[in-house]
Amino acid sequence: MRGHIRKRGKDSWTVVVYAGVDPTTGKERRVWRSVKGTKKDAEILLTQLLSQRQMGIDVPSARLTTGAYLEQWLDAYAKANVGTKTYLRYESLIRIHIAPAIGSLPLAKLRPLHIQNTYGLMRQNGLSPRTILQAHRVLKEALKHAVGWQLLGRNPADSVEGPKVPRAEIRVLSASDVEALIRVAEKTQWGALTHIAVMTGLRMGELLGLRWQDVDLDADRIYVRQTLQWLSGGRYVFQPPKTHRSARSVALSLATAERLRGHRKEQIENRLLLGAAWSDEHDLVFVTSIGTPMQPSNIRRAHCQMLKRAGLPAGIRFHDLRHAHATLLLQEGVHPKVVSERLGHAGISITLDTYSHVIPGLQEEAAAKLDRTLGLA
Image (tube, rainbow, N blue to C red; front, side, top):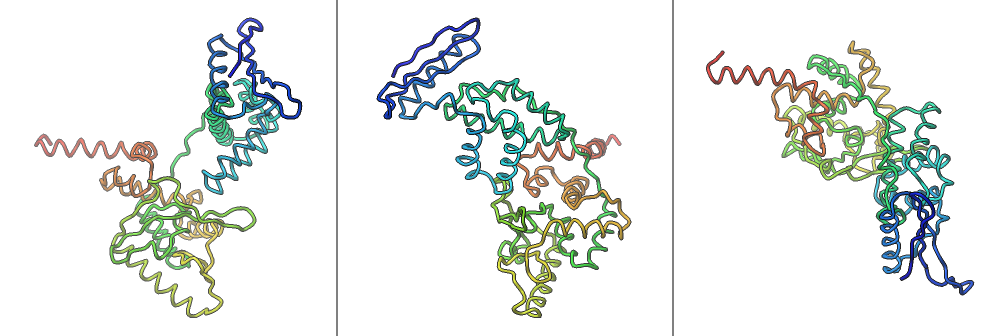
């Protein structure tokens, strides 16, 4: 395996690798790479390219554009390793925002400044910091694989910071707020769904993907084994939980288990009443009146109507019922580790960071308990 380095100018080098014979011309093919930096940077790239050739991997042409690479990454990696909805989001960010800005640049010549300018252009086009941060994470992940696949010597996105996104303020629901909402919900078709959302902390996709085979009413426990994700065009897919921590079991209170038994009985009666018109082919716990999967948009619309009837602020989202589950447990002194496990967080630190607004009151209570324990109060 042959290759060499040529000095072009100050902090500028050319790496040349002999990449075998071109079968169409019979001539030896050379691949050129320009490197900005020290001679050591050029030597590292030369070693990588020669190692790649030795393993039988063809050294990519310098004409490989960033856009072409990102398309390959989507097809070769993202499609097989992320959920359908996540893949569509990745593809959309690359196609609409990233590729138009840097897609024509040769991948080997992509620099941090090109990426930073892309984010600036996205900001000028009115995109939110959250969307730009998502684009940054996707691009950084894609280029990380380019380094691993030895198409790049280093990841240019590592030298670029995504925008700061203000943390969204979590709406804290009191126990009386939750009780009022549940009372209103029980007068509608959404009663069981609202009750289970509050009492388990499951995400909407986890609730809508829950099957009766995942419910053990003898042990008063449910198992999160899949999620339901809606796509454009009225399509939906079932996906495994996002992480191994998301695939979990959640203990049910006696009242919640009883509510599920009542819901099961109502669903069976409705199915018998409709006969052939019933179309639940997935054995889902929460379905429409004819047995089809529920659409999140319909749930959110009904949720807003129930908030109004309960006299609660309109800005409370259905997802805030998950937050209510966590905050009420923490306020009752349940250990954050238990709350983290029920929510399916990747670690307890996420739970503590997310619900830090609850902690000050808990710490004051803990200090008072210590006074009482030591007889100082």
